[in-house]
Length: 259
Image (tube, rainbow, N blue to C red):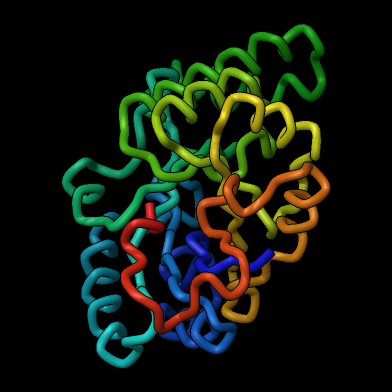
């Protein structure tokens, strides 16, 4: 199975080590047809992107495009869900300027208010020590994430279930209804075959992302592909997959494939 795009990469604008140009150069060298720059939203404690940087990133992406005409360069994001109501930490006016939106739950974020902070941060930490919290936390996380998917045009939910547990079936059902893919994250490589198999039953699509934090990891899908193949997924299940050689870098318009 060959993947033609990496939608999940980070740069020095958040906590990556490379520039946008360096990520694009590696993607091009590895034969990808598209690459997405997807920085964390501002709510990530210590590593969040300044909202003003998204305009700078847009300008930089447009400049780099002029030197790399054979690869599609997209500006996205990895927004944070910051409330039980599914609010995101990136303003709508910025989201409207992006080529696609990814969003997910992270354990250390500035939430919308103290109440949401208690539920999404404190209780998620407590559930590892206090078993009685686990069912409540799983329900809360699932509600927050499914509301985000319903209320925003999210292309991909990033690393669902990592650190913060979710109800796989409920999330997959909502994602399938809304045309949102679930990520199989090759960087973390934690997702189980069982998670993928359960989610697939609801007709949801998947995206395999590198979650690269350094240029050399762009397009490194190995662990994600292993999980997908062991779970019985094929090219039709994965939005950035294609049978060789159905798509090459120089063939046609990829707009129908890009979220």
